[in-house]
Length: 262
Image (cartoon, rainbow, N blue to C red; front, side, top):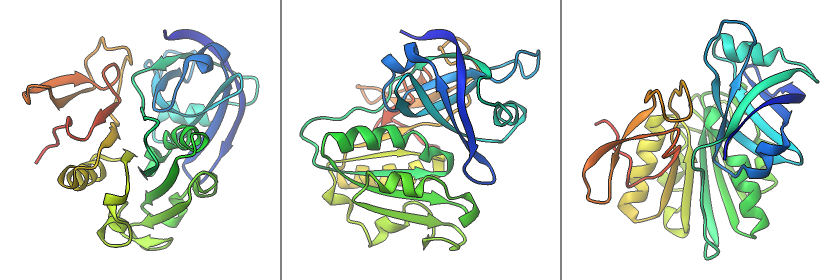
């Protein structure tokens, strides 16, 4: 059940030139949250910006949540200026997150850009289940890299890729799958990031018949399924195209469900 509450900022620190990590005291939401879900945050009590910001849950901590967000507009800029003890309007937890089974022994996590954020809670939960975790993080450049050390704590192997080659392997997040990493060794693949990355990963996993869960990034105005601003094309059980709301039916879908533009 989602709550609408006033959360209290515990900490708010910069991770790189654009990404921040905030911890928020919100025990009611934290008690019901699970990996892959998100929250809606009001960045200001003023009239602008009017809409809340959808932000994925990075980690579930005692009595609260950890989020990571990129400063890309006025709302997230206001968030970056929040200090300890400041209050925030929060609605959550929202959406359907990641799932896994006790039979899984080895999984691959793939994150691109700010899509790295929701992989933290998943990696922590799978690590506690003694699942072997391999992780690929994709960024544009070295200055964009964040959370490499934190995710390495839960990952037996971790690769970083950058488009300009200034850190790790040169190329996009799927580049290691072109020879360095064998996709067939994994029981499941989980990913979050830009659509081109998810599309390429879905094609690889679907072709090799590897189960793959994709956390879709869409702009959400309401976050509760009312505005229909986040609908995405999905194949239903009858293999017919339909539209589903990323905020309610998602944000996590099977790679076989999502219809990407050609």
